[in-house]
Length: 142
Image 1 (spheres, rainbow, N blue to C red):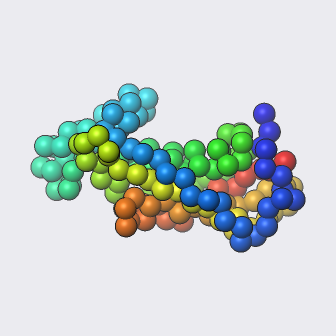
Image 2 (image 1 turned 90 degrees about the vertical axis):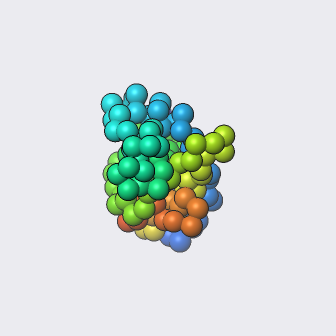
Image 3 (image 1 turned 60 degrees about the vertical axis):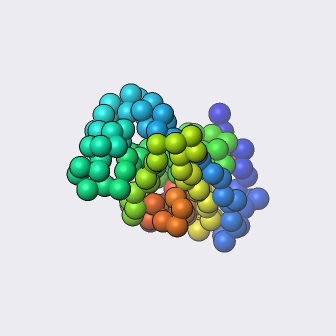
């Protein structure tokens, strides 16, 4: 598999349109099973509030994964991402209802590198909060 985005078709400063990723409690339970992280702050409202949180919060790595998903979907190949890193800047609070919350991820081609690689700067928000900062991916394009 190879990236479907061509290096010659992108420019520094080009925006990658935002994508919304809905998150409900069931998604956190599924992620807990996949990751092995069963910390009750991610599924038990009573426990989360007892330790001072506003409600259940998404796993940081789940939030990071939504940024990775955004980049791999854009590139067209998960193997095209050769480096990816973020800092966590805010929690994603997930209410216990049918709507949940939305993580919105957008991107910007920050730099074109040699060997048909680009640096994509990501912005991930939940409501009014930026939930990832210094989020960058290096992507090998076609």
